[in-house]
Length: 233
Image 1: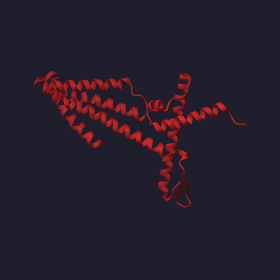
Image 2: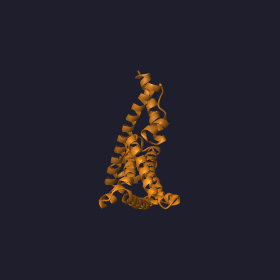
Image 3: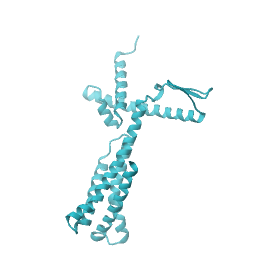
Image 4: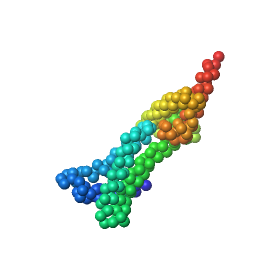
């Protein structure tokens, strides 16, 4: 799917670029370098905004207003240049000329959606399989070169064992980081609303899957309840 979307984006971007070159040559700059460089800034604005949104999604932060504004400006500019290219041949020609710009914008956004969704599916799968930290029922036996799980015993080599240990350590660190962030958000929500933050809102703010959010909310509620009960005598 990604290859198809990128292929459509490449074709649409190529056509849109040459439409913009014709418009700049006709109405704008006369110097040759500017004729070919200015169009790059038009569709490049959409690309830059999309990359900014992708970065925000990866780091689970809310995209800035500038990134949204850049996307809107880029879309308006590319639509305007493509419409102008075909306008002198009539309204129908203008609509046809504008289509590559529409296809380009949609392809960009579809590509970003595929990337973001793939990351969310990966995170969700990790939570559903219960492979976060010590909860995964796996024990390594260096003397036998095997890994014993709840279902079966599988032989692995030392390199694979080290890779597995590294992956588990990364998952533990990531889980702790998310739990810390979730604790802070829940505390702020309880201070302002008087109740725990919902899993839906937590998933939206942290840009994680709902199963992960449910697990975090459950953990936080248990911690708060234990804290309220005090240490057992």
